[in-house]
Amino acid sequence: MSAAVSIPSGSAVPIRFIKPTVPPLEEILRSYSPSFVEGSLTNSDVVALLECEVSKRLGVAHCVAVSSCTSGLTLALKALSVQGEVILPSFTFFATGHAVLWNGLTPVFAECDPETWTIDPADVEARITERTGAILAVHLYGNPASVEELQQIAHKHGLTLIYDAAHAFGSTSKGVPVGGFGDVEVFSLSPTKLLVAGEGGLVCTNDSKLASMMRAARNYGDSGSYDPQLLGLNARMTEFNAAMALPGLDMVDRKVARHNAIAARYTTLLAGIPGLRFQHVKPYDRSAYKDYSILVSPDGFGMSRDELAQLLLSQGITTKKYFHPPLHRQKLFARFGAESGIRLPRTDAISDSVLSLPIYESLPDETVERVGLAIRRIAS
Image (tube, rainbow, N blue to C red):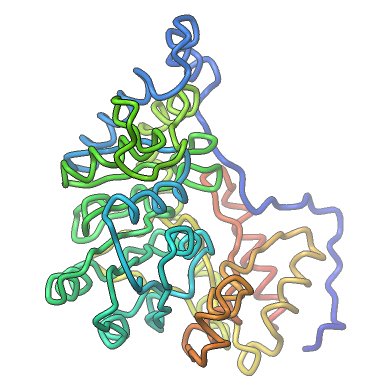
């Protein structure tokens, strides 16, 4: 089938790619009102309560709320005094790499596993040199990275281990919630995530010294003495953002269950179609399925990923290419990637064929069916 082929969309209602579910406004305002009346609008009682509840939920000693996952990752690298090179996946959202560049560190891009699409521990170890300071892994789409293997590698080589857990609030590995792995894990609470604060991030760690440094770092580096102890940022979370996230904690389990149900239905609907592949989640892991993505092979499927996306759009079905192009082929990172001779064939193959389908907890079953059957019709 060529790109010239089109399928009439009829009068079907367009399907949004994402639609965040948030608590009722009156519930948010009930949490927020005391801070508003008191005039404590940033980093006050509601933020502290959110931090406490997240720590209990994830079984971690410390949670530090920040303005975004990006600021959390940036400040964590600074607070941990990471130097030299940082090994990270190229197949990730560019904010992962931005945190490295903002700290003046050198990104070293590693391959992703061909089945899970998360960073490949074997390739990570192969790229370690005397200049390596840290490993920055990603729980891609909510699928936990290989936490045990990465921990063994980090311990063996004396490296800091950081997780970009932006997608993974609600994910587990061997029954253990994502949040307490490595030296630190950083979540995102932006509107595309399962726990939503409008904007915001959560830095989780069992290291009390790091937690103390992060509390200073989010406040320009000042711990209260008006004499900053490190180069920080204004990365505080507002009380309103915390008030949105706090009641959302009770919704996370239902959201994860719904996302998993949608993912399972998509996989059933699309199974057996030549040229389509799915992300593998290990049997002992549970993905939050922040995103559900497929790989489209032109040879088997009969058209490219881009052609499929265009045909779906003509039927009112919006998709995304998460994440294309990979970091090593982007302008900001090219001198550390493609221009320096780095070749990541597995990453390229996955990034060039990945297509993310609509998935959110309010997506009706009949809409999931519509998307899946539209792809089956195009394939046939």
